[in-house]
Image (cartoon, rainbow, N blue to C red; front, side, top):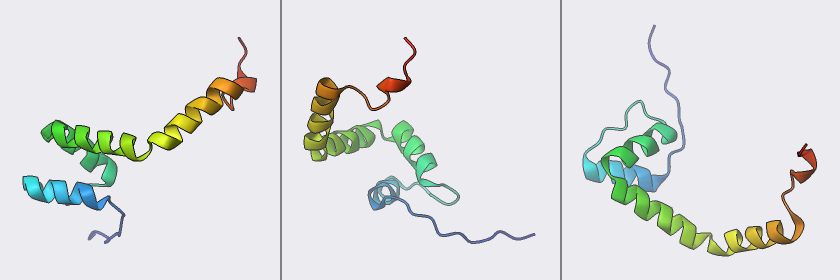
Length: 80
């Protein structure tokens, strides 16, 4: 039985990084590619994580403010 071709979405930045490193992404999904790139190019993964944190700093700040003032949305599930 042959394989079925499937279209999946992968972050273009990950594809570019893999191509730059000469890594074949055939048979990988985004999760597998992220894990592999973290192993072979930790500096690239760290730079991507830092950039994400910078791009989302305002939302993170607002979330932390909300949690500090109102608690977690799941607090009512706590049994302790």
